[in-house]
Image 1 (cartoon, rainbow, N blue to C red):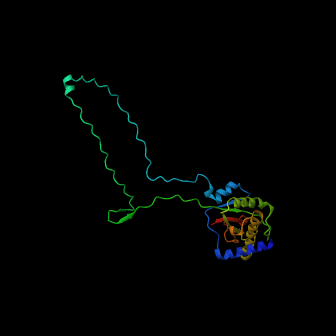
Image 2: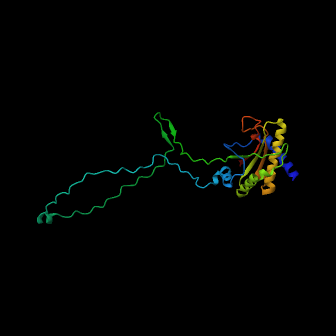
Image 3: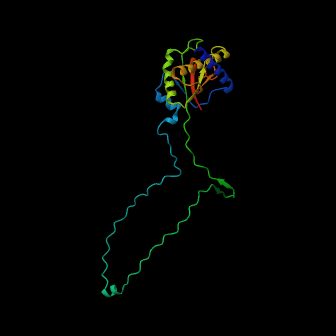
Length: 243
């Protein structure tokens, strides 16, 4: 097991040199305990949520015409019956069949319009709804001083994350180790790599997550969440979905 962890830590060092930083995400959701699986799914796999189909309506919707109030109309007096001679003289007119109006061919929608100055202006395409981007989750693992051993208090969160990985086999995660500013920079960088590798190794050994689905990255103290770099809340492991 130690050889596997050392191999992952070596890959973390290589990833730090190649990537130079984590995948960008809009929001970081920090947890102090294991969240429900559905919450993790909504953050990491937002496209799996039902009812996300959105419809865009262009222009104003058609409104029903307001009802009109009419004044009461008195019934007209009955017309006098025509004389028999007039009825005999009247001849029925031949029926006329109304001819349907010729159907005009439909014109395709114009791709551009002509401006007043003679220039051609393109018609913009209707806006398309954009899928919500996956978020980033973080967990503060209380590692012992100078240790990369995962404490029992963190196993519940990692087990929940492993459950999500088994349920969503298409998901790949970047495992990021972060430290506070206490200690030399190089030491913190190596420590963050070791701890991120330990977390990835736990997911592989305990939940069967394949190594190609995990990108291990140690970032040391370079990306604190709080302005005070020495704040212990900056010590965490983050998980970013990568494609």
